[in-house]
Image (tube, rainbow, N blue to C red; front, side):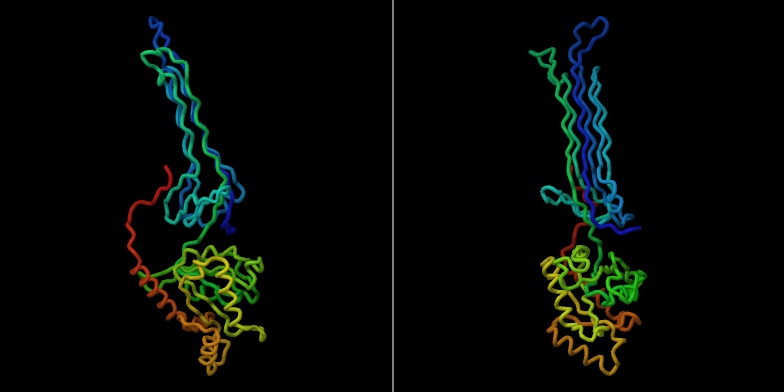
Length: 353
């Protein structure tokens, strides 16, 4: 299935039914009084997060969603039937914005979470509501309200604990294959990864975390070079970033230190919050460096890069040193969750009326 993480749709809620102006007319009851019923409520449009969906492809070609109108009221105190609401099922992690105002409508980060996208119009009042001691034969009634109409932007941000960051061919896909059951495409040319891949890393029978691999970032991505910034949104929910660096590039003129700095600068241009996330340095492709030179090469890079944070040197293709890295990540995530304020457990949140 093609991975689609953006979509634009239009939602139109149903109009409320009109109220009725009617009078009771039965045998032997010549002046029975008003009996016009109210109109029914128009259908609303809701979004529901569903963990069984992982792409927005359903909204790539079907872009207009309209709820039914409510029925009009009738005589004999008959109220119109309200229209059924419609639900749009979206992947967990979908963020919904109003296209015209830019307002955040919902951030559906939990399975089953609901958000009201467009509210159905109220039904009109029948003339039985207008009777009084001085107005015994009211002929007024009200029309139903129009339903809301909105143009929306849907944006999927995958849910992962750890995000992989790096230049094309830094070994991100190879790393995720080495530590999880995910099998993204691996090849010896740039931009092999064309969409985000998720993998579950199990470090123990009851301990695991989710890792996200996104297409490589290059210098000038802010100006649209390569695949640009379009996939960086998928790192927004992560707790930790792993910056993979190719320590043994095929191009002898390539400078790993300059490339690493360029990636971080592109991250800063895209989002300051993402730039400030905890970030670890992972130096990959040790297998291409003679064993006696590895330690010196790692130290030289760290010194030139002026890095003060955690550093791991691995060979993803063979899995060397990958297991200690995954255990360190798991311990870090557990510690982060322990220090965070505990959230109350409850039913999935419902946004809207």
